[in-house]
Image 1 (tube, rainbow, N blue to C red):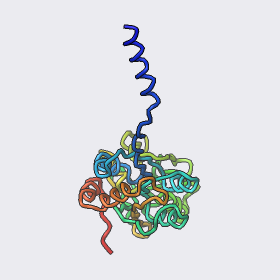
Image 2 (cartoon, rainbow, N blue to C red):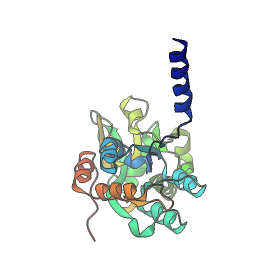
Image 3 (cartoon, rainbow, N blue to C red):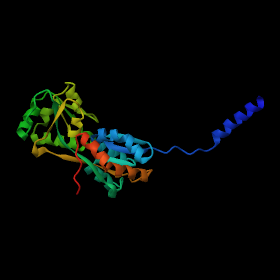
Image 4 (cartoon, one colour):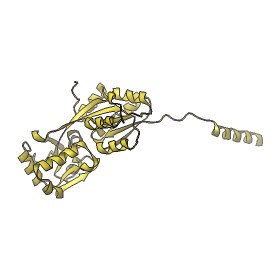
Length: 256
């Protein structure tokens, strides 16, 4: 018995020092908040097409750009096109791999069971904003491209000072959830983010303030697994992704 026990112990010790193949690292995706629902739904499929696990880190576009500039490695970046081109100019994604995925417009969200405000002109929009008790907007300090535009719209309307006390600033949240819970009158965000919240109706900004934001993807410059990352890019450009994009209230970008 002692000999058998000794042999068993020896085998355990030897096994502990036998080198093993490390587990394949996850394919890492950094993704702007505006694409959260779409990419989250596709995560399992992305792992299947890549042949390995996929990890996703969400955040505001400006935050993500700063993180990448600071040395964070990403195999795939999904960002507003304007920001992705800046990241490419920084040398952190491969410019020739940029692919457009979807687009979404800016507007407001109100409860479907409440009155629908008329914001068809700049003056009407101004009066609706001034009449609201609480307005939820994403904090422009974190660099979301739509949020910076919203702050500029308030400035152009000449009501920034009047609105400041009634603004609820958020970070990486669905602003319409506050309207759905009765904690705010109006949410301002992209159409896809507003439509993601049940019971909320989306109303686009007046023509003079309208903006449509394109979300694109690209291969990270220092991708750890470029082949798997390229497979994900091809999938995001394909028909399966297009179905999910449409289901979440976004549009495909027209081919050039």
